[in-house]
Image 1 (cartoon, rainbow, N blue to C red):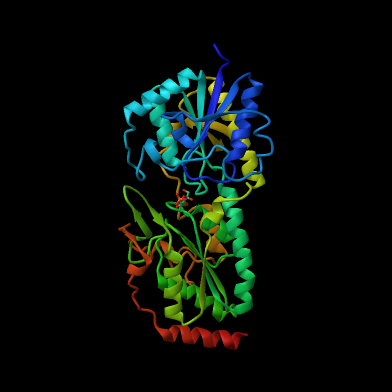
Image 2 (image 1 turned 180 degrees about the vertical axis):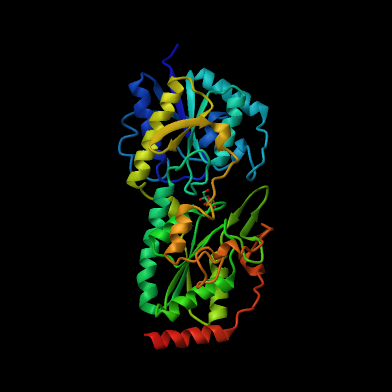
Length: 409
Ligand code: F6P
């Protein structure tokens, strides 16, 4: 019989640090005497046709700092185990049997599945079927429960905060209001951290209901203090005040979010009669080299995943419980999102600095949101063209603030 092997695959949307995990898996497994193979295009490479490469020190050399994944990836495909959050789609038993057969034939002791919520839900079904798997949590959104950090998040924040730094200087020079739309489907961690690190003035998140009045109030409040530019950070998954998400429905799959930045910008422009510009960072947040933090985290995850296989702790996912790398059953990590707490310490710190979350007036106490909670109940997808905006804001307020600002300067 051939030498025991460890398999690895990358599934779902890519993010910086995937290659660092692959390298960590290869190096740690060869230290323990395993051969290592990488399946191509995520779960697709496991069956019909089976597609893999033998990983070696040579073909993994120099990939630590490379974005993307040398193994390729597939989002959903034949192995989808979820459509949205809180649901379960049963994987075709023929596929499961096929995968089991592949791993047995290749003498694989354990398969390292690197992925986000949806991909780990597949790993969980593999585990239930008796396929030897361990999970590694990946997503720029950082929204997986059971781990303090997924790798890729820090790199996305670095990219978004650097973009805010750049917007800051041009916004200040032209006295413009700048809206930046960032990724973050269910959770606003990227917008929250980048907004704080990049000096945002307003941060709009999926977790915190907001109003245009409060957003405009914050901008005017800044103007009344002589700051005639503002940076508004909005997560793509933030709900509109009238309810609903902005994006495009996809047949049988999760909607493709995007477009809320333009809607927010147009409405601010209409209410304040000020020039507003929009930037959408999109997939730039998912590309490029991983930060040093993500390289260290991804490397530790890869090495720990191999240790789990060696200790026969199958069905577990590696996780970061600072300062230690530990593991939890995969089932504990899937379908339970880790979202931003409205009263969490980062939000409280931001409020203490005067950053608005659009949920209370700019001159209100940092705790005013407790009384001013808006009800948002729907989460339908709306395309940007369909949005009808309501005009309640009085221009008097804008003019008064502008006059005040001029007097102040
Ligand atoms: O889950 C990570 C993420 O980047 C989300 O922030 C975003 O909504 C989604 O993936 C985009 O996925 P895709 O590249 O498949 O459109």
